[in-house]
Image (cartoon, rainbow, N blue to C red; front, side, top):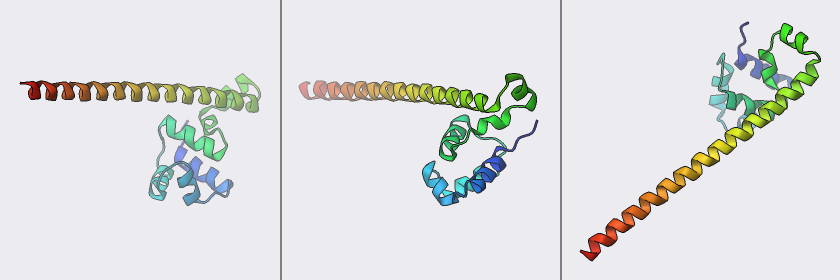
Length: 125
């Protein structure tokens, strides 16, 4: 199953009658980068989550086959569950990002303290 997600995003944007500039602003990208996305057959998951939120559509549903949808049952129910799963995934990403940021701040403080102590030792000597 071949899916060109950039084309799907472009078409969804057209259907929503959303201007490229407005869309770019909402996802914090430049217009140039949006046109690059339109040409990409695949994009990072985090970017697709952000785009899905801005467009108000779960674009991940495009990666399910009809057989998967039929086996699961009602498409709308699947969309809602996928959306919730994506929200949970974003929360995990956010937590991981915040933890990395805190850890980096701790390392920075340790480096600053180390440099300060070195300076004190030099002055004392």
